[in-house]
Image (cartoon, rainbow, N blue to C red):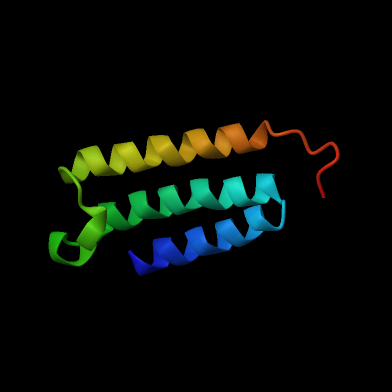
Length: 81
């Protein structure tokens, strides 16, 4: 969980610097990282990543991360550094 939170902190720093696309990509990446960690970590080590059953969590995190990354890819870079 700490690793996912660290990636989210990096994303927040990018967003605060008005780098929306990069911050959004990191947020999506954090969700995909949570999906992979939930898939491979045992129940005891998953901690707060375990919300429902393992298959549900993995699919939910993967769909969320993929959707955020797809939306971030559509953000226009015109006028954005």
